[in-house]
Image 1 (cartoon, helix red, strand yellow):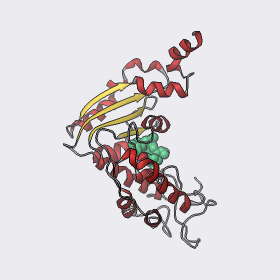
Image 2 (cartoon, rainbow, N blue to C red):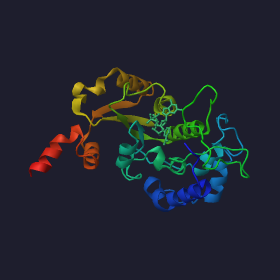
Image 3 (cartoon, rainbow, N blue to C red):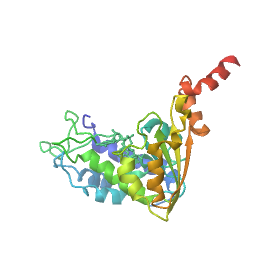
Image 4 (cartoon, rainbow, N blue to C red):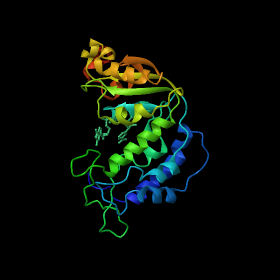
Length: 264
Ligand code: NFD
């Protein structure tokens, strides 16, 4: 987790790119944000600060500066399926993940933290920034606080029907300490989010054992029911499998498609 090189240029570049090519798909907002200002608000969340101990609200100004409307019936949460979820969301055209919204897009995949020994207080690429994973002596890392704030803000912004893509090969599938369970489900708005459709996806077809009825998924169903959110669950739905198998035709679950294409 070396700090990302050229962080300022990367963040400003992402901000410009989002507004040029993503904002229209994701949100109809016309208001342009000043990307230098976005950088100032992002970096002041961690510049000159201890990488292991930042306040929970340190990215408040950044979130306010980048926040925008999330279209109804399109939001998608995910766990353990980063690549597939984002291939499926298709940069906000099919679904909208946190990383397809401006607060997430600007920082996704970047590694950043403070460093008292540089002129701007920002760690250079020779420094290792702590990951989202916490340890006893590193209890609230810049990354965990960033993704926690962004996840909470996203969950509060979504309306109508929502989608969730979860990895079938994880056990449990709805993990206790996942961001999705800890920060997103509890922040969905009762009465505003009406239905959740869960896609459980895996590369192996043995999941015929009905993962939608598994104990872990019933816990998710119960957590959603507390907020009067209707529940639907599908294992390996066809539109998701078309993408998975297009990219990865030799996966076990794609064998029928693979055989057809070989014999024809
Ligand atoms: P994941 P998830 N402690 O695939 N999001 O539900 C620490 F410190 O398992 C997006 O946790 O799914 N780190 C991003 C963790 C990051 C822990 C976080 C944990 N207990 C959250 N669990 C992003 N774009 O980077 C997981 N991580 C780390 C939002 C894990 O190493 C998205 O809206 C991996 O780098 C999505 O709905 C990342 O968190 C949901 O939360 C994702 O772990 C995905 O988090």
